[in-house]
Length: 154
Image (cartoon, rainbow, N blue to C red; front, side, top):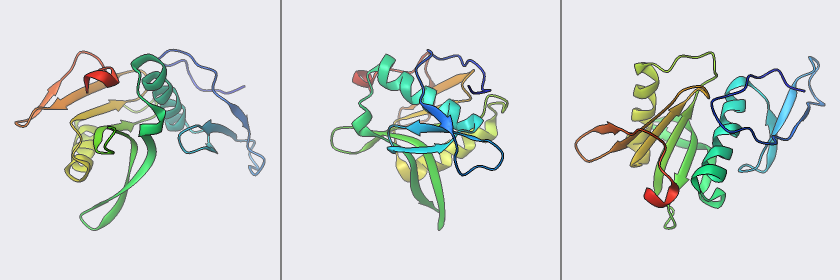
């Protein structure tokens, strides 16, 4: 039904439907965290697959996750793609998504690091669905991890 590629993530039963408001025959995907249908773009395809991976494979509680979290950075409104919180509602993880066709470059890491100045999470993740990078802030700098840690190890 959709034209998006298989990602380097476990497949899941994404809920996809035609966008009734689209004159071009666009699609929508259901975002369980936001509890609404959203436009199915390549970046959104990555987001929904990655959120499913975090919940189903890494034990991240969906109730402690939020998509499109607004922050103020240097007086400007920005949005973190996904933020994961601990049980005290303190941010633990910030995730930045790109479309599969977008290379993960230093510019992407700079973007998420700027967001983290405001959010102050200990773990940063960047993914284009094909490649995933995860790093932990240890007080002195960022250290890359081999894999995305389970929620219990945050």
